[in-house]
Length: 154
Image 1 (cartoon, rainbow, N blue to C red):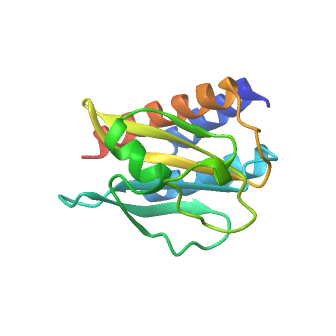
Image 2: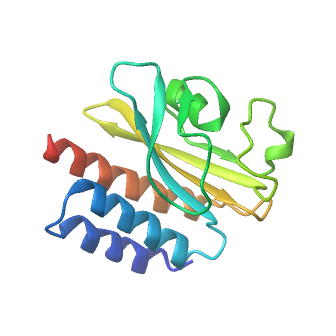
């Protein structure tokens, strides 16, 4: 994975004179196209004052999981734990919401604004046991940049 090049491209997207939604979609598209094993890339954000996440921008197959209650599935668990969650084999994860039979592994990284978990990036892969510390590092970078972008857009 070309981590440093991807970070530069993310920075360039962040600096575009476009709205937040456009930038988030560009980030999804970039990650999905540049990392061969990122088969679905999307952002979920806290849905107002509700204890649930709502799907925002994404790239990949359509999903019926547009609303995820806190605590349910990998994304819902990250909304509660405030910690990265890497699942190398989704079939071994009890509290997993299946988005399709092709998904074998998943990584979810929270996005913070002023110390509050406001959302996350969610990546599904059709390849088991694929995510490494480099993926976590890249996605933490993305989430930090998105957090700043959201804080500035309010």
